[in-house]
Structure formats: C-alpha cells, structure tokens
Image (tube, rainbow, N blue to C red):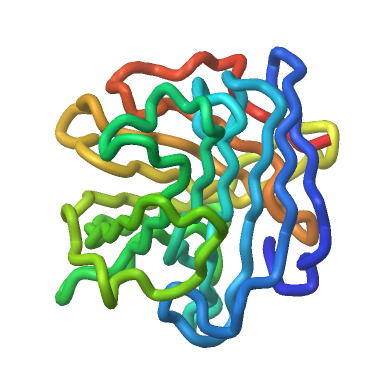
Length: 232
C-alpha cells in the first residue's frame, strides 16, 4: 500500500468541483521530529481554498511527516504547515503564518496517529483507541524537521481513533479492493463535537493513497460530500 520506493512520485487528485490537490512524496531527514529511521513526507498543495488539505483556508500547504514503526506500520509524527501572509485565521498568536506540530505517545496507551497499518485482513476491522500529546511551535518560516518537544511543552492531550479494513473503491487511478484508514481526531465520542475531525483514506496496492473522504472537518458538522478527492 505504501513504501519508500514511492519517494519522488507526485499524486494528483480532484474533488467533485474539479479542484486539484497534489501530494508529493518527499524524503525526510533520517531523524525527523525526533524519530530516527525511515521517515517520509506527504507534501500537500492545493489550487482552491475549499479543497483539501484544510478546506476553507486559501493556499494552505502541509508537510505531513510519516515514520515507519518496527512492525512496518506508518504513523504521523509531525505536521509542518504554512499559510499565506493574508491568512485571516492567523490571529492567535497574532501575525503567524506557519506552524509546526509534533505528536507524542502517552505512556500506557497505543502509539497514536496511525495512518497505514502493518497489515489488513479482508473482512476484518481492527480499531485503535488512544490519545497523543500535542506540541506546537509558531512562526517557523521554513519547514523545520527538528524535535520541537525539546523546547515546547505539550499544549493538550488529543483523542485519536483508527479503524482499518478493506473496501471496494473506484477512482480514475484504480478500481478494486483498497485498504481504508478511517481516522477520528479530537472530541468525537460519544457524539461528534466542535473540534472533531473524521476522515477516510483509501490506499491501493502498489499505488498508495487514491481517495480521501473528509466526513467531518472539525466543526462538529458533516463535510460537503463534493470535497471527497479522487486520484487521477
């Protein structure tokens, strides 16, 4: 579903409105966000404010850092985010245009922010319920892969749930069985609340990510189904 040989590829997606999003698979430092080993970056760019990533924010750009665990699963350890100088949301603290976040496991809980599992058995669903510690640093003008947890204390503990299973998918790039990574982040249970994010990512054999369904974009309400993006 994903491996380091995909570094150098660029995946192009379109949503129901025709807006394009690209994800470039890029190398990361051998030690990224404090984690040594295999690290890669999903680098998101978009052409319309309403499209993924971060629907509603114009020109939002994301470097999404993935780390390969010892069981060969992939988890996210950091997000490096740049917003345009005109960002109307960048008010607290004032005048910031970029943000680095690091996630850290909480003792006694499963590793959080799983994106791609080590394996999936067709007809079965595996679920992980856990939390992570969130560290944040503002005003990093360029992507910074350093370990900000050394200087920034955790600002919160964030609930995280994954479910992994197989499902049939049909997109321009692929038709057939896919691995689904369904993710809930924030206050989603027992009922979805403001701050809950809920998405489904579909991975195809030998191709990687082929579809993203943003079911809830963090406001406690359902996302526009036209925001689902399909890989060309």
